[in-house]
Image 1 (cartoon, rainbow, N blue to C red):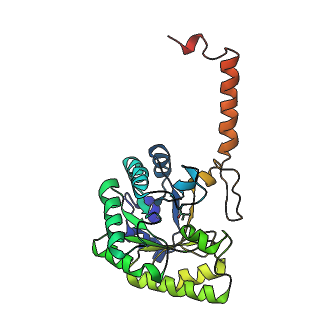
Image 2 (cartoon, protein in one colour; image 1 turned 90 degrees about the horizontal axis):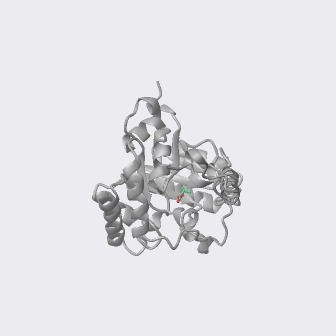
Image 3 (cartoon, protein in one colour; image 1 turned 60 degrees about the vertical axis):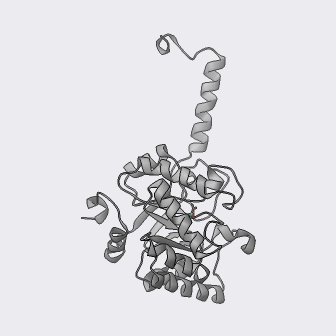
Length: 271
Ligand code: KIV
């Protein structure tokens, strides 16, 4: 029997058990009550209230503009919907890089005001102190290495990271450090599959990949991409399970046609 089917409430310990039993972990983003309810009812293991909300919900070009209060608004909407999944919330850009006290205050604010279960932050050794301090408050921390979108202006592009030996080595060292510091899991974004597999084999905490191949312990996608609500973003790693952009656009077109032609509402659709 898979752990996934038995578990009524996913915790960080359950995820660790999944890794050790070789059961893959499923993770998707959600930012609002209605979608989070569907994703949770379907049986997802982790819901990430990602700062990708800045892109897909607010229409910004990057994840940088979203604020701590906006993340809390999204997270508390998700929390109200979810019964089973572990809910992880991104610490947004500017809420933890200043110093470890600021990081702790931001993490506490998220946990207190949203009711989520854990936070995620981007980076390796440069955020070690912040992670340590957040952990002292009993808040579980998920790491994020590889393509870290909050540093997009440093990278300059959204291309695959750690293709060169030097950067790959740095990533391995950072992954080891995050494990040692006490992160309960790690996201690896857009790096070569071989490297991601090596990291997942080497460290004992679950490694969740996005564009990092199948050799890791689980997969995460942005919900809006996976169901095809977005349609202009087409990276190689994205598998679309629906094409909701076309479906919804078609439905709206039908509605407009029916209103204009006076077909809607008909006699049974009124009082
Ligand atoms: O914000 C986000 O959606 C993320 C995932 C891409 C992992 O960090």
